[in-house]
Each structure stands twice: as structure tokens, then as C-alpha cells.
Length: 234
Image 1 (tube, rainbow, N blue to C red):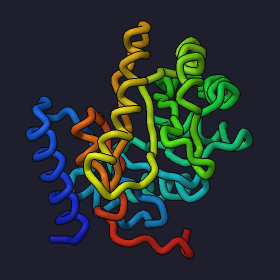
Image 2 (image 1 turned 90 degrees about the horizontal axis):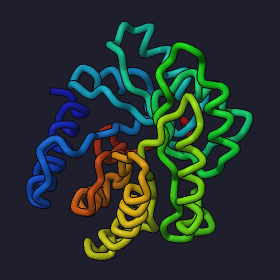
Image 3 (image 1 turned 180 degrees about the vertical axis):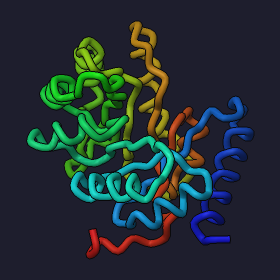
């Protein structure tokens, strides 16, 4: 059995156990395999093990990988863009990805909406929230999210699904939960305001259990599946 297959089985078991322990319904949490810096062969190994949703942070790397995996004859996969978005990069994102987790400005959402090709399903959108207020992190400030969400929800060719965050790293489980609880509170307020949201994209290799306890519907896991990253190759 390949190491990637073993890792996927272990991560899936952790997700199932945390879902049960937090008394949430079976299947409530989707695994997004973050394949940045890993080549098409790693994605194909994960596909062979049953994984179908993959996240990419770097646009050109992601586009090359999508093409290579398609040419290798892989089944239809769901590609998520989870990196920072520059205005000049919106068209290829709109043309090649099913989901975007990192919308933080109305201008970016407008461009994605305008550039989504006719005939493709709506682009699935999460708003990135800078929940910890870190200067080094992308994301809308919590107090800006409601206004942004209503504007994005009104755009054609997009479907606003929910929120995403990368909180400041914390060692303690309670601290991890507290940060994710802040995002969940914003999410619940938006739902109470009438937005049909269903996605909380939060939790990574080191803190996904805490995220699941606070309502994550999608966890983004990379190194625990694919191994340590070599950013010199990225």
C-alpha cells in the first residue's frame, strides 16, 4: 500500500472519529487534499486511493497539474483554488477551478463572476476571513464580512457557499476551538440574515480536530497526506 493511501486512510479515520465525538452527522466533513508543491504523480496516487477534491495555492502550478492529471486519464476531479488572488489572475481561476476559497474583496468577486465561462456551472465561493487580525494574513476583517457577503451573493455566475479562515497557530485544543468558534459565529449570523450558506472551510493538518468540533464542513489537509513540502520546488 502506498504511503499516500495509508495517510489518506488515517486522515479519514481521524475525521470520522472527530465527527462522531462532536456528535455531528456522519459525512458532515469533506476532506480537501492540498496538493501544492507536489506533482501530478502524487495527485494520481491520491486519486487511486479514492480522493476526488484537491486544493491548489499557486495558479500556474495548479493549471499545469490540472492539465497533466487530465492527460493521464484521471476521472473528473474537483479543483479548489485556495491561494491569494491577484486581479490579473482571476480569468484562469474562473476558467479552470470549481471552487475559490480566498475571496476577500468585491472587485475580485466581480471579476470572477464576469470571467466565468458560459456553460460552466456557477463558481463556488468562500469568503476568506482574517479571524485573528494578523497583518501577514489575507482575508476580510470580521466586521466587513456581512456587507461583502451580501454583495457577492448577488453576483451572477457565482454561488456563495460559506467562509474560510486560517487562524493564528495555537497549540492548545481550547485555543484552536476558540478561533474557529469566532468564524462559526459570523457564519451563523449570515445564515440568520438569510444567506443560504452551507460551508465552513477551516482546519488543517495540525488543528482539524478542533475545527470539526466547531462545525467545519471542509478541512484542508496537505502535509499529513503528501508528506513534508519542499518549497524550493514550488
